[in-house]
Image 1: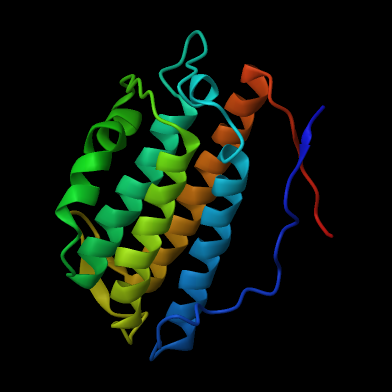
Image 2 (image 1 turned 135 degrees about the vertical axis):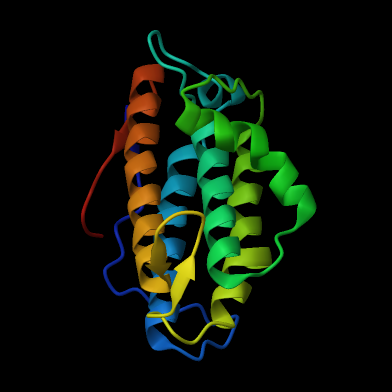
Length: 185
């Protein structure tokens, strides 16, 4: 039987644990919070063997995708804000973070609790505090390629969490753990 997931949230509220000077940046942080919560909901009930499952003809696992999401958020927010990321968090997600876009397999044998903790840590220790210090969503940032605005970085991160959440849902289904998608309460 498929697990009934949490309903989508349409009334995003800015984080209240930090004061933001820009409502648009606070809304970007709220969107990331919602997308991160969706991924947590998809993984928190899975055993390690489901999280490390790699289907034939792919290199992806749920655990690798979650670590990749945390790694990418850390990297983009670091570049956008200039803030220093926690070294232990960076080191913990580096291998899987780089393996996913390279098409390499990053077999991980971790529990859901470890992955959920990573998702909370990136938010609490880095993303929200770094974004709260920023005030101009139109500021151009040179982030190792084209100059992007903070708004564009936040939109990319929202797309990134959404895209990989879909892959996580498919891997969950392939492993045999259904997930009942729904729109409202």
